[in-house]
Length: 408
Image (cartoon, rainbow, N blue to C red):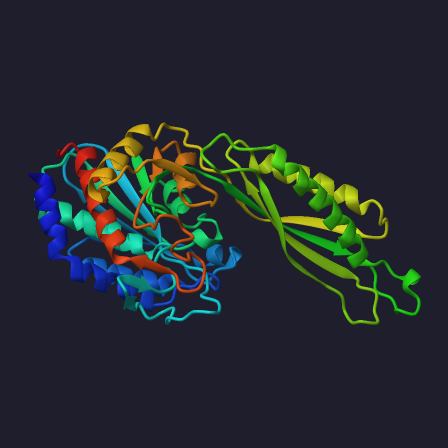
């Protein structure tokens, strides 16, 4: 049976797969600062050593610089089994900086109690290993398939994915028929929230604290803006997504800075906010509404100028083509491998999957995720992936590919 041949191929490569992931974790690819081309080179070299042909697609330096990054190189692997559909498997190799409070080396790739620790181990270097070794298993098992498998390993998901999957798809470097993106739960994810980041700059006029009336207080204006935003946030509880348990829109003012000195009227204040979008919302419309609220709040301070700048807009995942068949096959194969029902779900994050959906490509999220992204400390200290989850997810992906490519 094909399933048995795939299982044998995976078992024979288990140790190699773990070492592959360790290497990826041990080389930092933090974003920021976003200097990820060295990690892409390492990944490409390791994939080529495994017998895969790797296309390197560097993004021009000038484009990268405009995005506030240092270097981006996307990798594409294509393996054609025969005539048939093209299935893309996408994961990202950039990761948020490790931060504090780690009890394991964030770049050590240590295995403790069956878990491999390190920044990016769960999100989503693990799925570099999941997808690459699933493809290798199909090749080794001599699966008589009809179609092509592509690996899309990209490097700017943490800053929006515009130079990753979107770059590849917009330029027709790839045009897959369906896609699976890095997983963040045991479930097959078919919907997720979006995100809008705005920067609000308030410009006033400095003055001596002994004569504050001669200045224009930017921080005073900021308090009016904050009050307006928090009133806006209080209204979100009345709007609940119909998709899974994605809940209501959310907003956090995550950063405030301003002022010159204690005895000077502040001439500038800057706020940065994070507005989470449910699938029923349109990001550009939400942005217009927020800008209107902010501008209205500053009318009480006529000497203040206000600038609002978009930093990021990641629309929610709403597939323009039905992902039902893809999700059903993944759910069925995962349920067999895990020995428990594995269904579909939504997550409150945003991911690169939305770029595939925007191109009309059926897409779901599945990979070496834990039961939830919180379980893996994703983006937190001691991020990890369970080796058992990595192995099971790789088998699920390999079996799903075999079914999608009409090999079973």
